Image 1: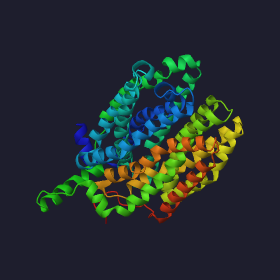
Image 2 (image 1 turned 135 degrees about the vertical axis):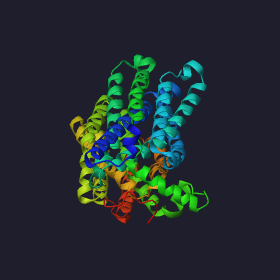
Image 3 (image 1 turned 180 degrees about the vertical axis):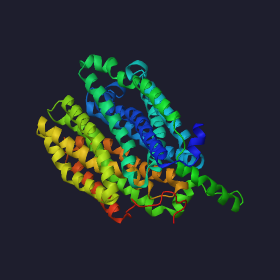
Image 4 (image 1 turned 60 degrees about the vertical axis):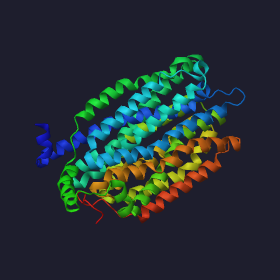
Length: 450
């Protein structure tokens, strides 16, 4: 019965109900996946250096090593994007999304069970790297599928609003991860480093069960189903041969891919200033407490739950490009003051700058990406296209916390090179947004590049 309802034409009310259900499912699943991913970044800044890469003479070396492992996961993300993008475009979005959730959940739970270097020696960091690679592979295919489920179900005039739901899931995951790490960071150091750090990872087992329950109830999007008959007819005309999605992207969608990659680069480089680099800077080079920084990030992420939706909905009214440009400008303006405020050890201003930077700056950039990027590609390559756009830049982005920590060490805690690079990345994203077409009226049912 559910399958019949999913494949048959539906009325406006039923279509709206399905769209809301798909958006909520996208939000919940994405929240679980990004919770898993964010706790690794927070643990890298706080505990992994001491536990898996101990260096009593210079603790910053351990932090550098932890961020190197954090970066390793980003090398697996483009591979995951290609693999799950291919299967999502050829066989459907649902199976890909269930698989990515399983990969993320199992690997994260196992990290919480890992012995440390003190217990098993070099095998501890080796196993950490392996599990991080599995995390990266899974998340590489996650975002594209979650974005498409929300956007392809959405009414034509609300794609920005509905597309913001997986981004809201990202913020929920961040709130959950930073909230739990804020609580465990209150433990005395001996308890934090012995068993407290494991709690956030082990709790992912509960969350993964909730996410799987939600995702198993998903159905394929009407846009994908409508495309299947046409794709089968085209394949018959070509003698059963059909160009694989990634080849089609590089042949007919090179410009949209490059523009989306540039926009993603600016958003993510700025975002990681807020998510991990600010915490590293504050912990090692300022007197402000790590708890205040974690809580400030949590409050900003909680605010982003609303601002993602606000900016997505705003893009339905004034356009994707305008909102993205707005976010780029906010990010460029706030980057240098962000570090000045942390260095000044001002608790109140820390909360303000985190809110402006994350809830408004990242909010405007990240909130419109699902709709903006999805509308740049045709249906038969959309999963692959937006996954590549998001994940290819992940390689330099994944090395960014490591590089920034090295820059801080080399400059004795001076953040100006990091701020300068961040502003440069934001300007690249801004230029790409200016060059991109306005897509809010795009036909989501188109198959090819025309």
